[in-house]
Length: 75
Image (spheres, rainbow, N blue to C red):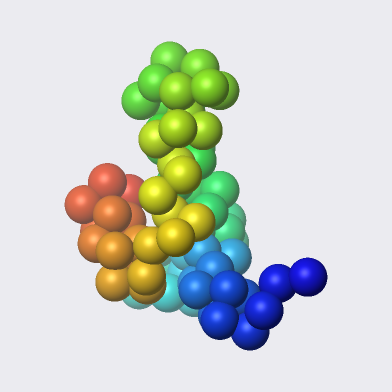
C-alpha cells in the first residue's frame, strides 16, 4: 500500500490537464496520459521506448512535471 508521501508525489500527474494549466482549456485528459501520448508519438508508438521515456514522471515533483508540460504539451 502506498504511503501518504508517495500518494502526494503522484497526485498532480493524475489531475486533468485543465485543472492545472489555464492554456489547456477543456482538456480533461489526465496529465499522466497526456505525457504518455506525447512520448508515444515521439517514439513511433514503441511502447518499450515510451515506458522508458516516461519513468521520470513517476518520481518527479510538480515543478518538473509542469515544466515538461509547458515545454512539450502547450500549443
